[in-house]
Image (cartoon, rainbow, N blue to C red; front, side):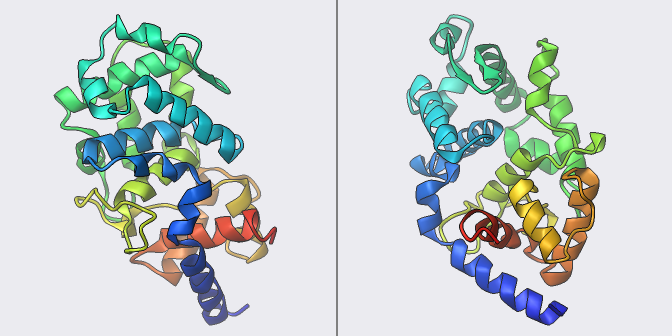
Length: 254
């Protein structure tokens, strides 16, 4: 396809899948249970953190997390202490276990009490053309408390050539809002133009078939390559094409 035809095709697919019906089968339904900004972003962050594996399993585990937090994530985080940690005994989603979730509770508490919240941390380190350096700095802030080394694997680092799929997805949820009702757009200090596509096996495969991506690995270098191509198609909202690539891969087996 020539670029004009490719843009028309992907714009059509993005508009089709970026619809409220998408929420029914996607983990984004978990933060959609809430209305308060802090509840939404905490639920979204935790859900995105465990977003690997099949979507039904992700939704079930994220739902369990919300139950364990009494369906009040922000209040739970602020009140969290060591005695509360017992309720997470036995929690596990793939390699994310009770040790990890208890540290996440303490770190989120620290971020809201001492760093102004999740949005403030990302905004502090954001570049005008990218949030990838901000993800790196966010990880440093997130792990500034004593913790087990194993827990660090649950937040990826773009500066170590990771595509950071899950945290880029979280950022899409928080920053982007085109009025469709899927993404939240509650982080007004950041712009959709700064976002990067959540690159995974499905979006990567479709991107390669469409000649948007040459690199074979789904890593940080591939993400930079894909970002550059998507920004040519729509510099103001490049990650709307995540819906197109994901939808083509998952639902249409493109």
